[in-house]
Image 1 (spheres, helix red, strand yellow):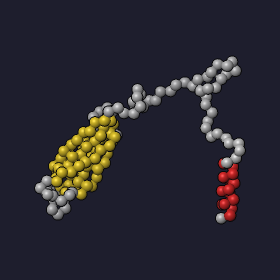
Image 2: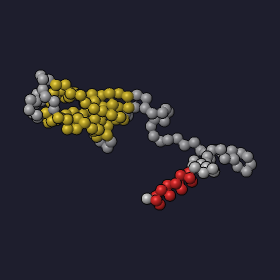
Image 3: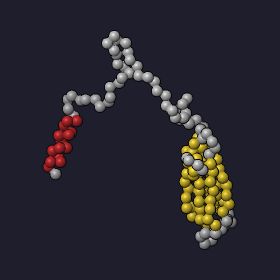
Image 4: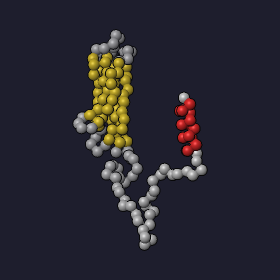
Length: 143
């Protein structure tokens, strides 16, 4: 324990020395050559989208409505249109005729191809007192 405390004190004293050193890398954008001309790093454009603004500019909420009968296992899904990206999703449930709440098995991103481009919700409506329920699955799509 004493050795640990000695190392801790030594590290603290070294960090608080009178000659602090910067940890940031030197900038190459302001370097000058022997002739006094400034060298500039080339401007690199990102290949990702979008390129003309910061972040996404529009979000759209798409929904899918499904009725799940008593004793059934199922749910719904909704897919974002081409050219948009899934940024979130979820569900809401409407009980019909005083039904008991169904069990939500999953509410998660959904893949209709190579990428996650939609939202899926799965319910189990098999509990005692179950009746028909309406489930609305929604996806938030950004472009």
